[in-house]
Amino acid sequence: MSLNKFFNHFLSRLGPGLLYAGAAVGVSHLVQSTQAGGMFGFDLIIAIVIIHLIKYPFFEFGPRYTAATGQNILHGYLKLGKWAIWLYLLMTISTMFIVQAAITVVTAGLITNIFGLEGLGGHDPQMVAFIISSALLLFSCTLLVGGHYVLLDKLMKIIILVLTVTSVAAVIMLLFDNPGHHQTATVFFSFSDTAHLVFLATFLGWMPAPLDLSVWHSIWSQSKNESDGKITSMQAALFDFRVGYIGTAFLAICFLLLGALVMYGSGETFAAGGAAFAGQLMNMYEQALGGWAYPIVAIAALTTMFSTTITVLDGYPRTIGISLELLFPHRIKHRNQEKTYLIWLFIIITGTLLILFFYLTSMRDMVKIATVVAFVAAPILAILNMQAMFSNNMPEQHRPGKLMWLWCWLGVTALSACSITYLLL
Image (cartoon, rainbow, N blue to C red; front, top):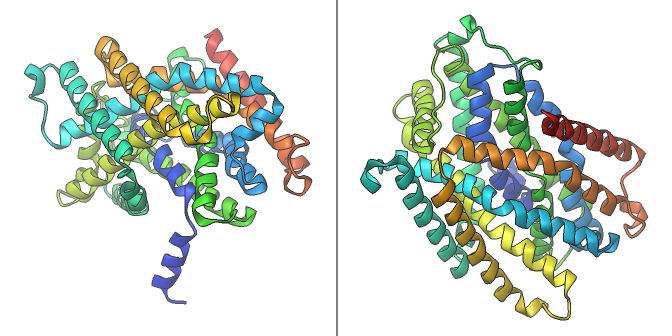
């Protein structure tokens, strides 16, 4: 088989796992990982590896449940009892506005910097961020309502590929030719420093993504099954997921290395504003690869963040609609799901704009709040996924073994201990 045929065959096997990667590679990578490298150098690479290992089973259970039953994992929640759906719904509604706001303001920062829109709103950075964020949300809503998001979905493979290639190239170039600031750095991560622990919580909260994404992945997998007219095999579903999951870990390390090799020990700090931070990020690539790389990296970063923005904006109303349909099957029937989707899409956009208008102080603070909320909520979602996967309703041949059961409990214990420690701090 030729290299071109092998590559095309490999890409053809990727589906919802790539949607997962497109949604995951966003704030946690472009912002949090780069900041981790800039602040602590190479210290937190091990944290990326550990958190991916801890969260792995709970993310895998989304597509695994769908491959085993043909249904999304919310049906597994329902079989535990309606309380599980209510709990998921409560957590989703309580976090969706701040999460959407954080992702939107980062994307707006990239748009502002790349297109030089700093002069909008009388040069007031907060007003510029609000104007761009509002336009971005309304444009995203138009795409979702018009069904044109399918085009972006098809482009996801190219977007992720371009971002991966440029990021790897930038890191390789910097390994051989970097400013050398990190060699004289004096700041190292310390577990005895409360500020460092707080940053670690924000860093790991969305690494590689909030656990909500496991439910979305399951729903995407079910949708793919419906469009294909058959249930994807367990082997194919897990292959698709693992490629996306390992890919997000690899990219997170690349972004951390980028921040470490350029910013760590330089005396510079990352800007709190979205547009200023975007400028620093773009300058890193330009410094590593040269001016020719700027337009390529700008397009890759912007399309990645825009994809995350619109995927999250689509994911919340979709999962809320399915949850309500499961809770109230006689009132909200499947044929009325589109109406429910549009209502919640409007609610999410309205709530996000209110947060951005009244509480937008800086991109950094917005991201910190959203990631910490995800960090604290992670153990609850992990337990729900675990209970759904190991319940007696799951076909025995598809139920994970004792090793996975032990892995899950170790993960739940670690996530719970971290959340409790953070709340005590």
